[in-house]
Image 1 (cartoon, rainbow, N blue to C red):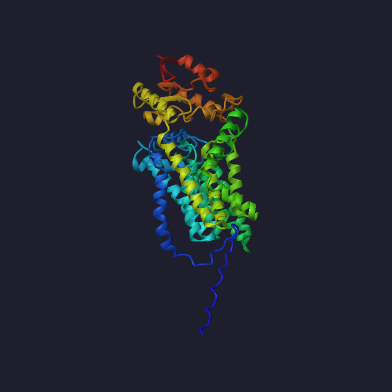
Image 2: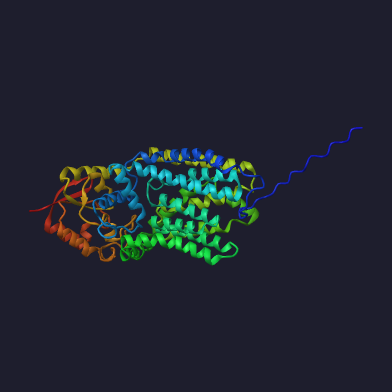
Length: 497
């Protein structure tokens, strides 16, 4: 008689919880082959998801501000002296470099740089997920990030501004800390802070991972501190330590308050939260499901998400682009949660995210831009009424008018916001001359007295920073200028005599 064949071996399924940062039991694919296959996919997806960004010359005033700053810096301006803003220096320098290499007539090179920034973010998240949960998780994290990264108002998601260029640094900081590369993690945190102050939220998960490592914590902490402090100190020395500290930290007290237009600001916050939730419709259910059945999660990722949420709340403005820094920790949390759920859950998450992405891309391709149309009309009128060497003052919140018109601003203060504290629809009691940046009005008066602008454009259009509410500007217009025209609601004043 033939012996009965032995029973087939039993397959044991191991549930991998999101906080178990270990390599899978199966040997991973060789790294070179893995990345050689994944990189083209992510690069193509990064480009496709940012196609709408090439549709308009500008997406929001931040891009216009950066473009004007870059032209002033290229013309010999000094950052935080004759060229000022509340933001760190890294992105103005990047714009300046792009203009020097490719010309200052288009933001196309910066659009491509934004594609690269999102691609680098996806690669860093993929590397972290692959190390923790395996090859499939790495691919999922990279793809999910790119699909979700456009899930806000196109003016926020498609613009080449601060948060987009901050993301690769924050993702790299966590990726390096996960591997115990503490100096590199510190350098990445510094890069995030030098792009936008709230990038410092990435330091929370870095320090958590450092504390979890066995032994030699002091050396690791020292390496991290050196990595964080050195680039920031160099940037401060290059721009002047006191000016750097004032414009990036201490000079924004009135801006970072909740007073004024509370209902308007809260409505904006709820609307942008709803938009991000819709874009993350494929990510949130797995996270909630895992919390219900396992009550666990990667502590560093939760800390990263909480710190990023605190950064969104900081300043109480709730602009849509603030929400971008929530996406990387959400993507990794969802990727980890999908590892203990049935495989069809990953397919469902990808399909849901792809459908949401398609809707946001369609919005970006088809939505009109009335503010841009207004600014272009204004810029055309300014260019027609002035010479190329004339300096003009556009009193409003659209600094891109200077760039589109090809005219130099008459003041280092490129928007009325720095002089009145008006920002994002805030029209409450804290808008006016006394709420501007400390020392701004004496400097502003001196600039206009030294080189009076040939043309002043009042683009306030009934907003609370209108000249009739500002004694200094009202007196200046009454004494030296006369009304000459009205263009699309903006009042033009020419110098008398």
